[in-house]
Length: 70
Image (tube, rainbow, N blue to C red; front, side, top):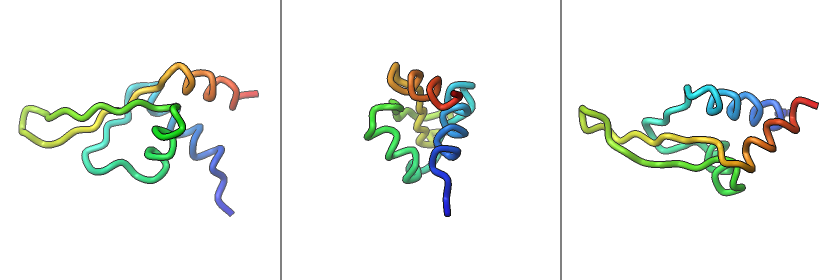
């Protein structure tokens, strides 16, 4: 059995720490959190011209992450 709450918490912690950058298409967990409104994504290109998708927490994501600790 897969624990999605733990996976979401780990992913949201990585995003909150500023360490989450996606060089390929975002995986299903990231896509689900974007669709749920917990993450926002922005696609840019780095200096080498490689596509880079940067994700960040939305206000709802901050509330969701805060609630997971209790």
